[in-house]
Length: 167
Image (cartoon, rainbow, N blue to C red):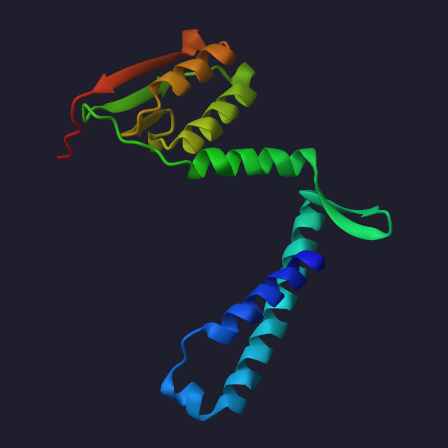
C-alpha cells in the first residue's frame, strides 16, 4: 500500500529530528527496536482497517495501469457525508435558546421517522424522549429544510425554548 509506505517514510524522516528522552539517547538500539516493532504493528492495523472497510462495502480495491487503488463506494460516500455532518463545527445559538422538536409520525411512515431520528442525531440533537429531541446548536434552518424536504410538516412541531429547568 503506497499510502501507508508514504506515511511511514514521513514518520521515519520526522523520527530523525524528533526529540528523545535521556533513556532513548543512552540506549539507541532499544529505541530502534521499539520503533521497528511499532511500525510493524501500525502496518497490521492499517491492513485490518482496509479489510474492515472493504468487508463493510465502504471501499473497493481497483487496478489502474498496473497499480492498486482504493475507491470509495456510494455507501462509503454516504458514510463520509454523515460523519462530516456529525463532526462539523457546531455553533451554539447566540441567544442561548434551545431548539426542541416534537414529532408524531404514523406507523405507515416508519421509514421517514427513522430517517428523521438519524438526521436529528447528525445535526447534534439529543433525545429527551422517544419523539422529543433538543439541541443548543444553531441548526434551526437545517431542521426546517429537513422537515420540508421529507414533507413531514404535519407531524412535526419545532419550538425555541429560553431555558430548560430540571427538577
